[in-house]
Length: 476
Image 1 (tube, rainbow, N blue to C red):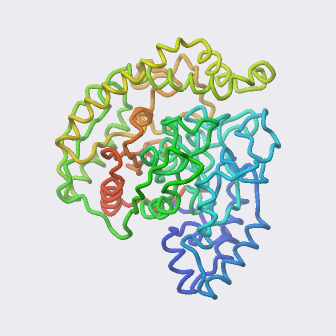
Image 2 (image 1 turned 120 degrees about the vertical axis):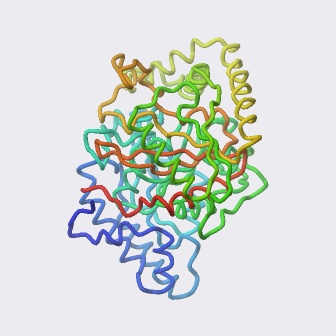
Image 3 (image 1 turned 90 degrees about the vertical axis):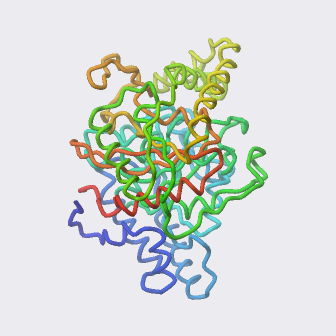
């Protein structure tokens, strides 16, 4: 499905692992790769609207410096890899608006710890990418930047909130990209764009993204086209950090090389017990699960026993969070906000504190039921989303939104990601599971036991070996 463009797409779609090996072998220079990627950005972005800021001159200089580091033998772990940074993530001296007119043109006074670790490892920021205002939802359009479209079918959304980052990776505009995940914001756009997204267990990666560092459902991470590339980045960003008291002292390194699903006991939940899943997504998920069995896993379908209280708990928590971190802006800015952001804040301001605290009781019941499944299984798998993707102009309050002809809350009830933010200690990786009839990809979530990153990555690598996706590219 690759297009025939002037730019050398074979370079733009190199896995980061391969690019690093070629840099070391001197068969490719970082400056050559950066030139191709920048050209690809200018070729593709007019179609998808994923870029907010460009840093091409700076990136070219840094790539030339990376060339020299390889000649000197001083290359760092990610030396010379093009890296797109979500516009939500502070980078010192660079505009960080959060997709909001409130912070339009405001420069950050610090760099997000996880992004700084990527830079310190040699990754080079050449673009910033789009996000919905305050990363509030699972599609990608904002008052500042408009709609970011799905590169596989422009009538659909990229997904969100890390929509621009996912599109950039999927289209060869970058090799790696930053993202974050409070309800699926890494995993939903990764699924819609046919790439890999990882929600690390809470505390594995430094966050320090919000004014509160004690918010346990929000995670920072990296997107890539292959499982190995995401593991490579995850090994860079993880670990205890002085700016984030919640980061863990224990540091886990994902091993390089192939994984194995042989003998793994995998529990397959088609719908988490309560989600209405599009029939096409359900079929593609079943095919993907069968491939896991082909890779040697022992798969058993299970009923998690969760119900709609899970969705209510996440929405309640999310509304309270928005009221806490953005409520102060209502008097001056509410009519320049995305109307749904304003609604989230106002609803959060009216919440009873007991109702917010009771969400913990729901989360406890969720874990009790999931723990019983994990007692006899190593992993849980399920669809990432209940639909392949949303319409490009999707509205969060669309009362006519349906799945299989049944009314579904349009905000996030079509996702199967947010429950694992409520159980944030569980690592979750989403990998492509197939292509829908619209041409838009679908995704499979691989969920691990608390803090068991290694088993998740091992199974994902094994699945990738029997169901490879990285050679399929959007026709742009």
